[in-house]
Image 1: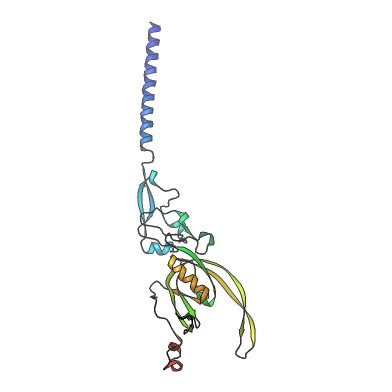
Image 2 (image 1 turned 90 degrees about the vertical axis):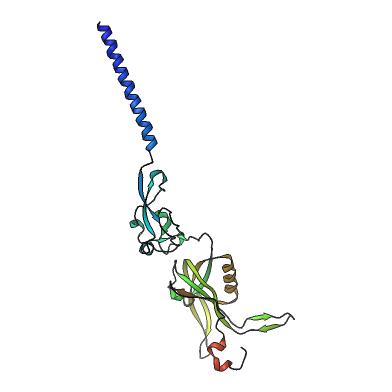
Length: 260
């Protein structure tokens, strides 16, 4: 009798253990099925944030919003607020619906953070302080680029050459600056009003702009054959390609009645 009772107790324990194992197994299946399905809140872009645009400016324009996504769909490093990047700028274009991560933002002057827009190429030009708006041009700025050609030569069909009038005109109406290099000093010799030749030190800085292939071709030719000047643009500044300015435009009395 005692032996039968013992066997019954063992059978009940085995059954209970089996039931517990089944319950744990089923629970494990449920846990695995729901793992990564819980919703988390992330920060996303609601409209395009351009390269060089500050986080504060984008926030003022309502370009950020929060959204709930499954944890499995959350991008590594995704933020849920702009607090960690509030003092930074976008390093490249960020598009609507894209989750915001800190790696897409950096400081305004960091050379290692040079990011080229997807449809552009980077090109650098060396300019003096005067030609680059006295150092006020920074990454994220937009500039118009002017050229000044002093008496260019045109070759005629018969092989002869014709000296044309000097001209200053715009070559690229609006391009973004994506990098500012270090400043170096070069020497140049100039003639004073008294006719004396003196050597002066001229600071020169390399500016890098994002341009299309067609714009790069124009800029390279202009840089090799003319003098370039950058003009800093405001958000609402209008800059268009026009005929340009000739000597007759600044010295009308001298050129009145002449074709030049």
